[in-house]
Amino acid sequence: EVKKLFHKNIMLIGFMGTGKSTVSSYLSKWLDMEEVDLDAMIATNAKMSIPELFEQYGEAYFRDLETKALLEVQEREQLIVSCGGGIVLRDENVNAMKEHGKIVLLTATPETIYERVKDNKSRPILNGNMNVEYIARLMEKRRERYLHCADIIIDTDNKSVKQISEEMI
Ligand code: S3P
Image (cartoon, rainbow, N blue to C red; front, side, top):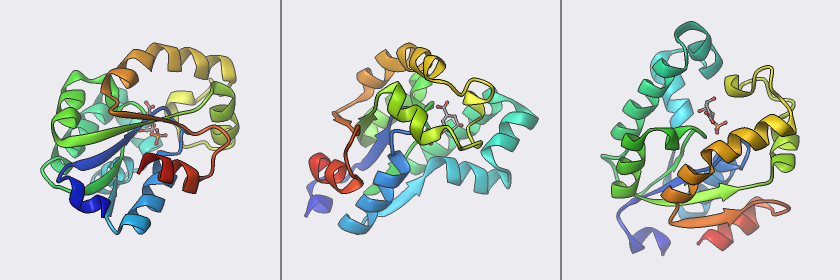
C-alpha cells in the first residue's frame, strides 16, 4: 500500500489548471488518504472566497494566509495536499514542502491550460489576462521554481485523471 511507504504528505503543485484538485480527489479515494485543498482551507478559514480575498486585501495578504495554511498542514502526515499555483513563490513555502512532503509537479502546455481555465472566473491572477500568451509568460517566469521543488514531474496533456494518478504511483 502506497500509504504505508512513507509518512510524508503528498504535495501536488503546478500552474493553475494542471489538474491538482482533480488528481487530488481521485488519489484520495483510490489510496484512502485524507485530502486537503489549501485554497479551500484558506477560504473556509477566512470565510471569504479567493477572488474576494484578492479584491479586498490584495495578493500579499492572500500569500500570508497561504503560508499559514501550508505550515498548519505540514504538521500532519499522510495527507494529499493540493496547493494553489503560486505556492512556490515563497522560499519559505518551498523549504517547508521539501522537508515534510513528497512533491509532485503537474505540467501542461499553455494551450491546454487556457482551454481548461478560460471559462472560470475564480482566478484573480488571470483577471483581464485570460489568454495563451499571458499564461505562457507567467508559466515561464515560474518555471525554475516549479522544477526546483519537484520530486516527480508528470505531464497532464491528453491524459485522464486515472492515467495521471497511476503514472504517479
Ligand atoms: C494562484 C493559483 C490559484 C489560487 C490563487 C493564486 C496562482 O490556485 O491559489 O488564485 O498564483 O497561481 P489554483 O492553482 O488551484 O488555480
